[in-house]
Image (cartoon, rainbow over all chains, first blue to last red):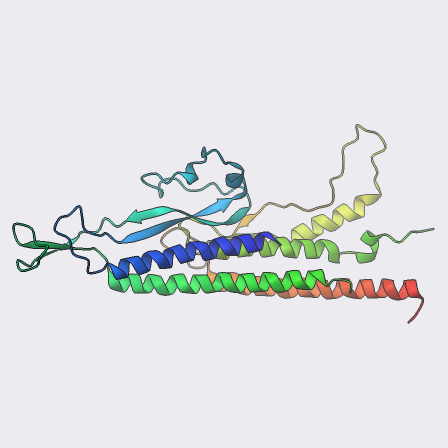
Length: 157
Length: 134
């Protein structure tokens, strides 16, 4: 029963990381830059399930603690009991950047182009709603678990 | 002369409540991973596990009379987690359906309350028997 608190807590932590990245993306949606390398790119967290055996490993031999290049490649092993969700890392979107011809812009390069981030504002708004709904579900889980343990404590009285 | 044993006094409700709290953990893990790609929703077969738990109670009369006898288990059911068959699987390989999992979690909480109610009644009955009042 007590692990429900940890599980719901990990869910809330993961969803708040997601809302943080959405906030960062929306705030920087119009942050211009004068070259491809300097421009902001949309960020997304990568979620993975946590397992009881993964928690036992503290030396970093567990591949899930090192966010490598392609975290989607290997699926997590699901033999053990789940222990919640974790954020493996934050990836940057590879979508094409927005290059605009604005010679009067102070950040324009020598050809008169300015680079804008590849943030899709509509997608970010939908992601924000999804994240806040999932956060809400975890809060409700926590409340139910709290009620159940309180009732259990008063057993036999 | 028979002694009062908690196992026979509480009957099926003790393993039932243990299994309900375990199932709540499994369902809450599903809900926490509702946005995890490639996560497969899990659940336990409650009826089968409860049957296993009460079968362990029923065979409790067999005792190990020698140190090399095999034990019959501690009667605590630890069944395998099964995978859920989704009605609408999503494109990222996740099979958690939040609304269904939430409904199951709510039902499970209510069943947990029911087990608590029965256990409370059992304890009240025992108290009354000890006091000799009605």
